[in-house]
Image (cartoon, rainbow over all chains, first blue to last red; front, top):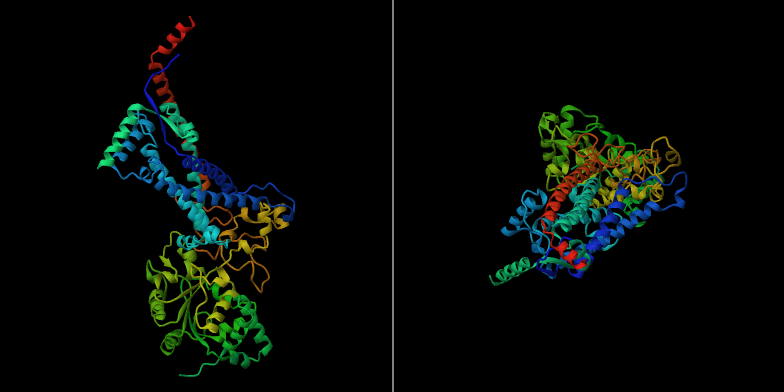
Length: 239
Length: 369
């Protein structure tokens, strides 16, 4: 048997609201992508019948709209949590404004993406590259909400979609908005593929229990890294 | 200043009975979405208000807007074109030519400053203004001069509202719609290629009756006619919700009148009154005739083709590329990248495992022993 004895700490990284956000978001993205793709390119599953007896495509669209509202409010909540959650969920993790974040991005590219250098990167939350990619996905979320509700506003009388009515004239018409909305869907699909692969990869290589951390919230981090992190935190707190 | 006769006086002179005149006013009130009292307002305006002086320019266009206008469903609508709005200058319809024609529109500008309406058919070349010159002056010069003292500008059709085919990629003449080249005056974009005749008449009647431009949407289109999508007012809409689609022009679905969404119908992204007012005396409209909407009242509809494909092609990725094909390609590329990455990862992981000392196993064996 192979075993290894290294001092580890369990760190509570993802708080309950972050975890709930994550899974609602995942569910919404899967639902929205599948129904969205169907709306863009519907299947002809019913034939030789009258419209009176069917409503399946209306239902597909209805599911898409309901999931969109859920996705939107979930996203709004996560934005709020970026200003009130623990240090790993805060907004400043996601926007690389500090030199140290850019250095870590370079490190992650060398170690995890290109695999040309081998060293352990001990990020307790997301690593800086992942955070930056999430920031880009947040922008895509925002654009997707703007274009989606922009198109929806034309057929809605309720207040929320009406707030987005300016989007369609701003982008020059429904055709452009629809095309952008469709292209961005592929952004979600590609993100989901790479995201899932990287979860496997990190769990496989780093063994911090990152997969189950999104269920339980705790990660296994090497003690030295935790001490280092606390030191850094104390330092930045004092300055 | 000479007295301008009113529309009703013109109508009487032509021997048209008052009953027909009132029918026309009622039709117009209905098109404009006015309440019943609006009919009276229209009647009064057409009886009393002097004729509206109009200069109607033709720039880069095909005259289909004029052609559409004179085919309006109510005969009196054609009369508005020819009589009520005094078309002091209209290249297609005026009798004058040459110097007299030039004089006619200059006279309007001099006589009715702040009162006349400039109606424009066609886009304006800005890349090289010489692409469209009339009487030795460029379209831009003519328009700028005419707009200076006008009351409002009406941009007829897709050319004047959004550039239409001239402004489609690569836009060799640098064609621009009216609202992009002038400023300071209200512009009404009456969209469509061409616009529906009754919509055009409705805009004119509104200008006459109320003396101001109609309520506009975010893209300066009259809300009365362009606030709803062709899709939402389509009589085939029930088939869309039921998931019943035409798959080819000769299939069972086409015969049964299913939704043309999969044939590239742009109804869901097009704002117009085709589904309600329809064309040619409300006989039919493209979808009713079995053809998908091509979105002719939307900006850039030529570049969002092909007409018979629901997803537009993506510029710069070959002729037949759609967002889906590119997305799928990127997906495959990602999968290949991941596979390569996974192989390297496994080599790395195996090395790491092999480098670990076998301490654990010896402990295990001693225990068992």
